[in-house]
Image 1 (cartoon, rainbow, N blue to C red):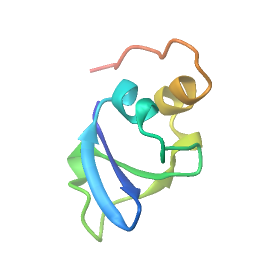
Image 2: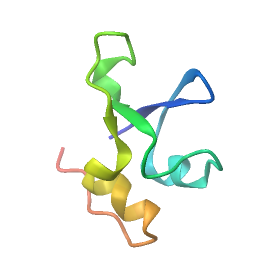
Image 3: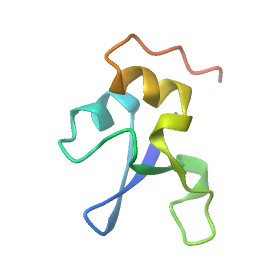
Image 4: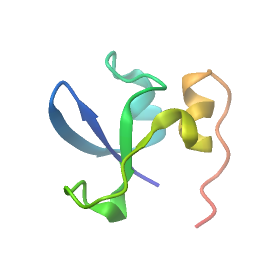
Length: 68
């Protein structure tokens, strides 16, 4: 699954988890939204630490496969 990320005052993406992990501004506190949310104002934005696949790449562990 790809994710939008709110960083430096901009909505960027969507990105794969591995790509997000390489962004210097991406942290466990970064706000993210699933790709199907389209990154719009009404989208469900959450902190990256609450997303299993993103938390895994932040912590440097292999991430679980996408269930889809």
